[in-house]
Amino acid sequence: QVQLRESGGGLVQAGGSLRLSCAASGSTFNIGAMGWYRQAPGKQRELVAHINIGGSTKYADSVKGRFTISRDNAKNTVYLQMNSLKPEDTAVYYCKATSFYGNDYWGQGTQVTVAS
Image (tube, rainbow, N blue to C red; front, side, top):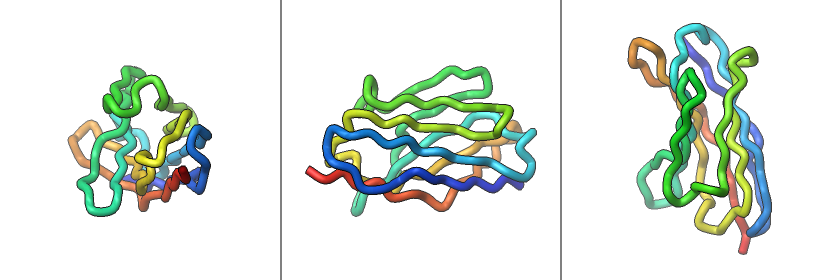
């Protein structure tokens, strides 16, 4: 089993920045890819950014050029640097880890609110 704990959410003005962190514990040697998802009220959960074990990344079109995902494998932690935040980025942000066996693990989520 893998446990994920997100931190770094909060309230920020439009144009501001936040850095989310997600620390993994438990069977971390099984972790392959990691990613950040978000869910706004009344909307489906969507992929924000993804990073595989080798460091290759992909982003949702809506965040390209503003958000950066990175990971520190030694610390079993994935980060999401969010710059130039917009009100439409307001959502609960979730961390996900996928094991080499295809099992998905989710964090509890952290609220990001961007005020206009």
